[in-house]
Image (cartoon, rainbow, N blue to C red; front, side, top):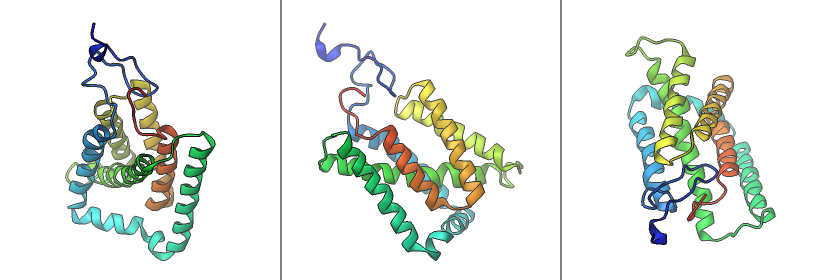
Length: 200
């Protein structure tokens, strides 16, 4: 059998594939399949005026004390680059872009799945008023998307769901979306510190 058509075994996160064409091994695949999906959901949600109002409210602490959040951002960035150096990972433009992408995806996922969708699900349109039902459904959607767009294993998606519920709890408790985004960025980096290559 030709090596290029050989089945690819499962990685730490990604399911195995009988076809190299379906296996995610390039950054642009992640960007196209997952990044654009999540960004599109966030953008559609932000078209709604009440979501815009909720977003501004959730960023109130950032507007009141931008210096504090700048310092927190620098602290997370220092941790990330320190981790890369400590683990002796290659540090180049591709890695820098990947870290930037992880920040971007943290922003859009928190806007979409911790802020917007729970509010939409518990709006007058659905008749559901209990916030945690909205959070539960939103995070189930969040984890399911990872299963299809990133081809993650079921157990990884379960942990993604649980992590999403933790972020929902943090946002519900603090009302501070900026802090949730920074925590998401750090955790996502630890989970996927480098862009995908031929195998995870």
